[in-house]
Length: 100
View 1 (cartoon, rainbow, N blue to C red):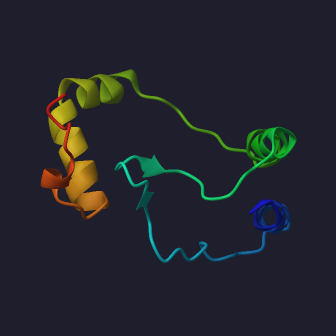
View 2: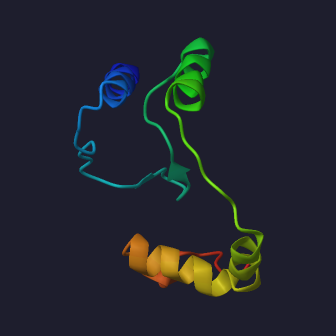
C-alpha cells in the first residue's frame, strides 16, 4: 500500500533496517489465466506519486552490461525457463504459450 511504501522510504532515509513485506501468495491469476498485478484500485494521482517515491526519493544506482543483456536475449528460452522453474518454482507446463 502507499502507506507502507512511504514508511519504507522514511526507514530507508533514516538507515533503519526493515524486513521484506510478507506475502502469502506470490502470484494470483484471473479466471481466464492472466496474471493479476493488483487487486485494488489505485487512482492516477496516487500511482504517479508512488512512482515518484521510487524514482526520486530512494537513490538507486545500477549499470546495464550490454553483453549480459545480449546473452539473456540469445538464450531467451533458457532464461525464461530458469525464471519460471527455479525462481518462481512453477512447472513450465503451466505456461500455455511458452513456445510463442
